[in-house]
Amino acid sequence: MTDDEWQALATREAARAIGQWLEGRGRLHQPISVLTLAELEAMAANAVARFVVLAAQRIRDQPNDSQDPGSGPGQALTRLLLG
Image (cartoon, rainbow, N blue to C red; front, side):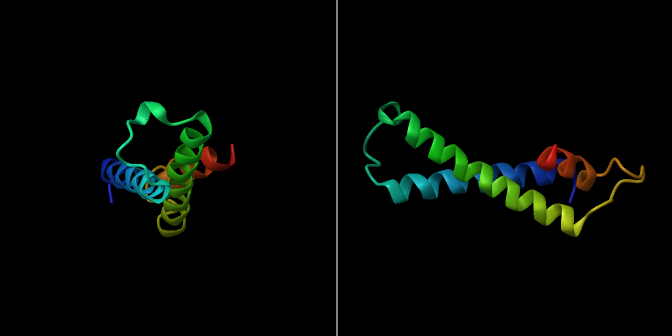
């Protein structure tokens, strides 16, 4: 999977996590502007959690898929997640 394909997948999965959180919360008829900061933070936390899971899976599956050792997505994601 290319970096662009992975980014598109991660974006879709984060959007799906946000949608699931919104559906679980209910009150879908209300505009987003009525969400509280705590609700926005919870929605963001779900999206970030999904990204972390996907990144961890990518690191496991493709730890060094770049020709330049130490610069593959696995290395970059590891630095992002642990840095």
